[in-house]
Amino acid sequence: MGDTRTRSCLGWTRAHCQDNGAADPEREKRWAELFDQLDLNHDGRIDVYELRTGLAARGFLRGDVEEIVREGDTNHDGQLDFDEFTEYLRAHEKELRLMFRSLDHNNDGRIDLGEIQDSLRNLGVDISVEQASIILQSMDKDGTMTINWNEWRDHFLFNPIHNMEDIAHFWKHSLMLDIGEHLTVPDEFSERERKSGVVWRQLVAGAMAGAVSRTGTAPLDRLKVFLQVHGSRTPRVNLWTSLHGMVKEGGMRSLWRGNGINVLKIAPESAIKFMAYEQIKRLMRGNNESGSLRVQERFIAGSLAGATAQTIIYPMEVLKTRLTLRKTGQYTGMGDCAKKILMNEGVRAFYRGYVPNTLGIIPYAGIDLAVYETLKNAWLQRYCVGTADPGVLVLLGCGTVSSTCGQLASYPLALVRTRMQAQASVEGAPKLSMLGQFKHIVSQEGVPGLYRGIAPNFLKVIPAVSISYVVYEHMKRGLGVGS
Image (cartoon, rainbow, N blue to C red; front, side, top):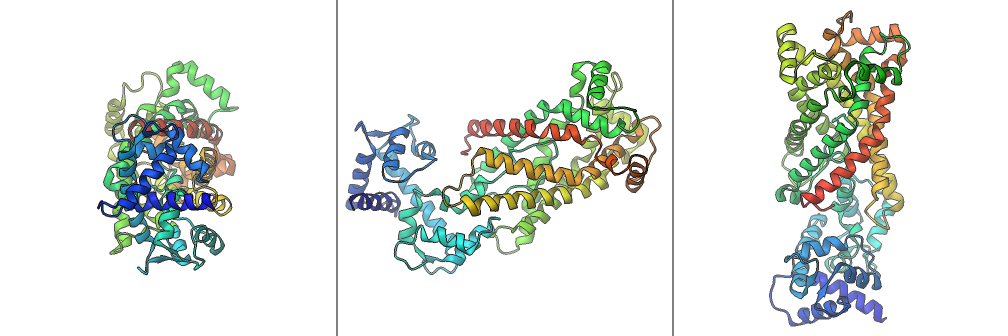
């Protein structure tokens, strides 16, 4: 009984303390009692250990205690004094109030089963009626099968699973996973994230992660391109002979040819795709500015945004292929390569292979998104009750599987694109259209020829994902973006 009363007091105190800033003796008393309970060594400050221990003793097992201290710690001493503690609570209930109102679609002061499902569905998370009932019942104290403000306030602070935006936030993956192809559908960002500048800091973190990841796996990427273009022309070619041949021709440094422009194109491509995605979303939502896109709408908007970005930066793709395949002394750099292509082949050469590249966005983005959403919803259906955070291994596993499936589906188009980009620079290579390339590959090499070079592509997935995730998380912390 005492524990229940304490827990109620604890939940009520932290949530109730952000009304309008007016003095409230009862509220101040509750704050002081709560602060004394959490201040285990009675030094007038609460550190991370004390907060975690105090909440755990009351049945609130939070994984984001560090974030509470970080947000409330205005003097940056790693602890919360009483003023910082109460100010954090005051600000946090304002957010809770806004969240409650956004979920209460019919403005009746209560959140029902349908509103929970609709809110999650708008964030791309489809849950069953049974799962929505479990979420609702965990907060419903009066047995009405609805949640009023008091129930929401008392329960929410210590059960972060029920933060609907956090569920979507935990599952963002396109920014942190870079396996060389930038064709994923952009992640959703909340209005608060857009206004606070978090979006651009996350884009910077994602670009840096992609740069380090691509540099680390550049030898495998060059090996893939080499096999795509030359694999059918050289007998008994394999991974080892190709690697040995590249090192023999240009030394170890030659394994990183084309990496410079591959890294340079990350920033403009990410920025253009994000801005195009936001504009396309506005057009699709119309007057419903607050609404989020469903999964199918995200696929359409993401594919169009990807096509827009690829159209603008595609000349860099052609340069990347030519620089990756160049022989020692063929070009002095990016500028020299672009100049020679322009002089010898004309402007149209910079868009050779554009059609299969653009068509490849549809199967890649569609399958990547569909597989990721399926895996995400399967996890949420089974484990959502305990925590909204899937953990690093689940997140990386889902992202790796979905991106790999997307690449597998679009790989024949990527192969044709690469051959069209390179055909003018390869002696004796037939100058064919997209359909001509498909027919030529199938007739000369069979259907397996459409997947030539896929082995090094698969080999680089796990190191690329691992590197990009680690760098992304470190960059986020460095840029002040919470995980």
